[in-house]
Length: 332
Image 1 (spheres, rainbow, N blue to C red):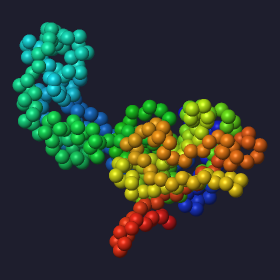
Image 2 (image 1 turned 90 degrees about the vertical axis):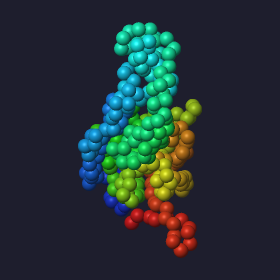
Image 3 (image 1 turned 60 degrees about the vertical axis):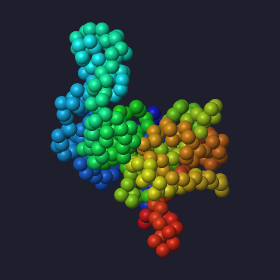
Image 4 (image 1 turned 120 degrees about the vertical axis):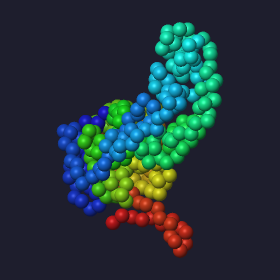
């Protein structure tokens, strides 16, 4: 759920602070975020990824490949492949769903395996189902599924944390989706300065949250801030996710700082990839965590209103060609 009573003041790379009242749902967006040919992704009946808006590509389909398609779920079949007495086949998952009746001829299935089709499958080599997203690999039939689960070209899930959004796609598509459909605030630059205000900090639902997207170094980063219950105690947490794969995320670092009354907390770390779900990152406590009492101390005053200012910076680690030592590359 949104922070319905939190205002966020953001500044990026020296920009003046402008108040953004989230309880009025007044979102200001930088439409300079171009999305060159963004791709939404869906799957066809053969389990191959089709790209909406991408180049037209004819999916690899052979008569043998069609034989290996389950007539119930239309997914590719893997051992054990079952058949009825008339030779109609289906996958083991669907066998339990059809109450032991062949979906084609309605005859009893029994426990007959189609060993011939399983042997044929062993001889096949097929492209990754994400081939039209750029994956050039070709695999033996039984290795293909394992690769596709970790393929670097597989689409990303929407990183929006406030709902079970089922949208998937490449990064340009998801950036446009976050901006246009979820109305997420977009900022250009690698520094940020947010002020979070909550009128009644003792009422913390599990979980209220906020998301901002930053564009720097030619990449996109998701800054999450939220309040949730950790055991019986309310806590506030901020963390960064990189919109790309884990290996590329390790090229970047970030810092978060919160303070007040002459005290401050500083967090430094590596952004997590959006391959890791929002909940996984949050539950691993991989970010800046502020206990409620500390947050109220930072807020000052009569401790009846939460006022937190979170500042931070993103930088890219670069290796010096002379020494081989990693040095930070700070955007100007």
